[in-house]
Amino acid sequence: MLASIPNDSARRACLKKRKLGLMKKMSELTILYGGNTYHVIYCPDESELILWSSHNEVQQKLDEYRKTHKLDQLKKMIKQLRKLQMRNNEVEMDHLMHQFEQGKGFDEFNNGELHGLIWLVEEKMEEIQKRIEFFH
Image (cartoon, rainbow, N blue to C red; front, top):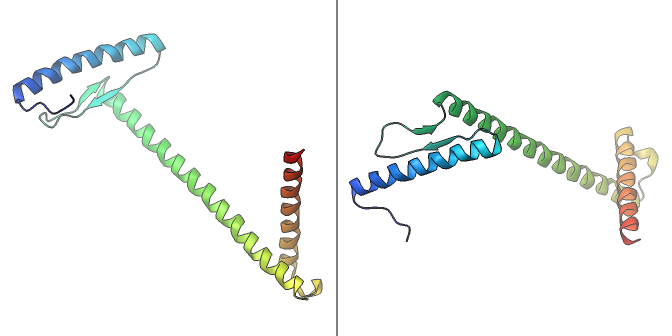
């Protein structure tokens, strides 16, 4: 059963054994796969982190991870923003189509609205074409 070891000396001894075993496994992974392996062990009883590889290398890898993570977040945000902009355009164009159906003539639309309507028609035609291809 996995549980915290209540006895301090037994817990430290177990950590020491497990740490050595973990370091051996990390070394084996490095040899087998030819890559770099890093690990950080935080122990509340010790003042410093236990690092596999040098402190600078681990810090560099952590910084790279954080930068990559932030880039991924920004990419997702941009993708979501584009989806929202597309949805907003569709709603606006649906509104213009409704106005057209209510009797508003083409000469009453401004240039931007006409371009938007053309865009909407092209988008809808693409959707129809995809559906046709899917069912064939």
